[in-house]
Length: 197
Image (cartoon, rainbow, N blue to C red; front, side, top):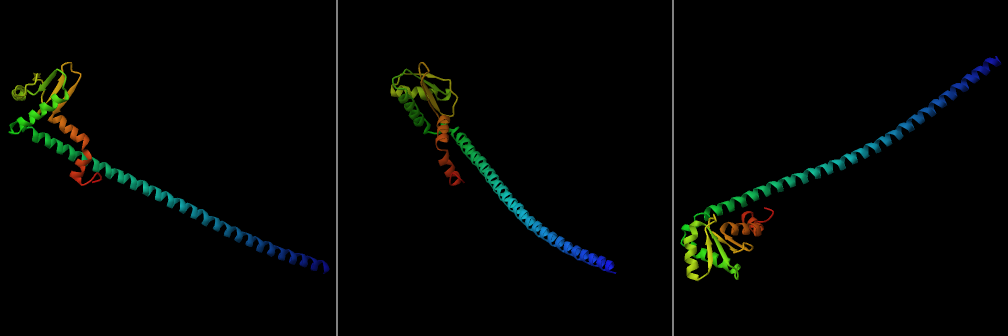
């Protein structure tokens, strides 16, 4: 009987040890699960934070691209308005020869060209439609110039030194081109109310 009691006692101690091992294992499993849950939450929070940053960066990138696209479209519209304005100006000026003021305007153009080429033997390049007017102005002013009818222009003239090294372009087209190149911002302001539209 003592043997049976010893076996029962060993079995009882083994059962208690087994329960203690199971309880410890459950506690360890719970601790591991809590730790895993905490780490999982931290990892999830990190991924969420990264996703938020990535989303903010992408949102800013898309906004930047959209603003650039709008600026490009505004620039294209602005450029078209300027092109149309200058094209309209050229069209309007194409009939200037029939305006009574053209002869005095042309005389001013001749004076500017000859002043720019003072001291040179001057060659005036004119549109054939302006040759008679140019002859009349040269005769009246007593200038000594050669007139060559080799220019096609809506108005005005060009002058060169006899050797061709110095040139003074005083056509209406060149004047409009200078205005366009020098005063684009002012033109934009007049058309659109400012450089940014």
